Image (tube, rainbow, N blue to C red; front, top):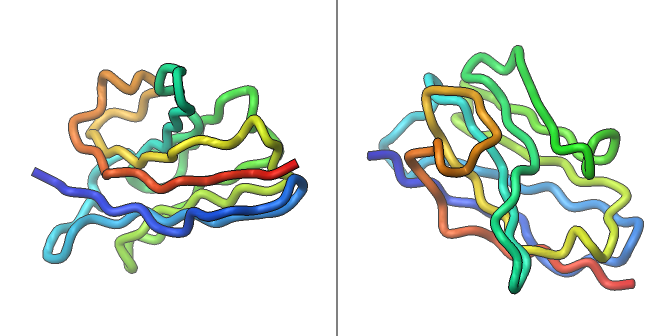
Length: 123
């Protein structure tokens, strides 16, 4: 079991930036796992945002965030970050990180999840 903890959410104006972080609960490591970010807005299904391979060499993004968001990881620090720039009101959602051994965009394929962090973008 790998429990994940997200941080960095908050309220930001449209056009602004937010950096989210994901880390495993104390005493665990996820350096051998691919990590994905997902988001869910009220009344909507959870959707894929970005994912990164265990070694950071491969990344994949949803079309809606390409060129605005960047996922990265530092295995020495045991963290994965999601840098979100040029934010839009439609980016408002609860953001979750998830870990699995396979790099994928299907949320159903991820075994381990955090509780999420809220990002609200005001217009």
